[in-house]
Image (cartoon, rainbow over all chains, first blue to last red):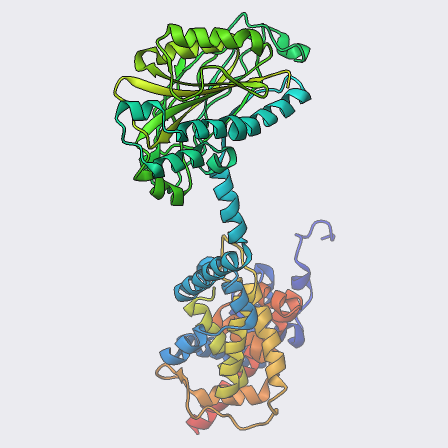
Length: 413
Length: 154
């Protein structure tokens, strides 16, 4: 028989196993991981080799021994102690997450952080400056801002503000202090303290603490614009510059002295520059933003510092309207205003006549039937923008009558 | 996160391979702490068998240096509970005859139950080497057992 005709046999069957190879394979044989061919060869070898048989028996005994050792157990206390083992790395990993921190530690850190933030804010924030700024901010609140027609006009407005505060109203105080006024003719209850109080209120800067509410009455359509106004303001197609009445959070001052002013806002297509100031109100009841082209009534509240509030609260029970205008052709319009007042039943309320001329302005102190209150405003705004405020006053007017103090400044000045 | 079963395996390994209770528990404590500090996957927070054998190998090597080779066994306050019919003296004799590599290989694969591949990976040796160590250790343990049986029969 040739080699090609013989069946293929494994190399292990061709060559008899040596004891060394057999001993090395006995463990795998006992573990049942030996290949079938090798297994057959090893079994054939084991039949004749006693040393290999003893070795196989030893390994089988060892396997049964280690199988018993698998059932070894450890004391539970020792095991529990081992499970609590921690290293710096494991502790760092464990506490790397905020949620893994002990609850007491988390709350402690939170409390300390909050305390530090509060203490830092108390120590570092300049509360005195903030309080001063807040007081200033609440004293004067810009109700509406209109574009200035010309820098000179702005200066003029400022000058008029000062002038209206000092000169004419001082004169008004002088006039009122003369004792011949409407209040006295009405009920005759004005005393010397009231007169001095009136003088305080009517003296320009001294009244700053009592910032009045302001109502802007724009120039009605058809009023010729100021010659110095820039071209963009002369554009009649431009929307009304009225923005909104702004009511910031209510101050803590007592609201008893607050007075409401209702006035009709009649925006005009012609932008007339004007700046007004008002105190905030704690309870705004009117629409804060009047729509352009529509009438809107605004409730504006006056305010003052808390100190003066208490002082005036006992005295100021009446009201007085304070109006201010700036007109370019005052010599021509002044008599017309006097005529309008007279036409609506207005009478002078002091010693001086209506339209009393002082420096470059005209002074009108008059009493008017309450029913004509809106009419006089409508007539005045025909001549130009009117800034009007309603101030508390110790003098109480008879029912159905209102008192006006109008100062008209010449724009040429 | 190390489970109680893994902690038991770790303690058993050191107790059987060091035969010194104090040193073994210190090594187990150290190994468990080290395993807790290792990064773990979110899918399987417990350390893998390969990681465990790697840590056990490192700790064993460090701890073994503190112990003399032919020291007396210090297992007076035995933490292990041997099952009935198990002779601890046989293991002590095996411990004196086998090498550290063979002892650790037998303990990890045959008693604790790790696969030879995992143990080889943790010990940084080939699987064949690990198989050889296990086989040699089992032959020696069998030889110790046969001698014990012979003396018992005599």
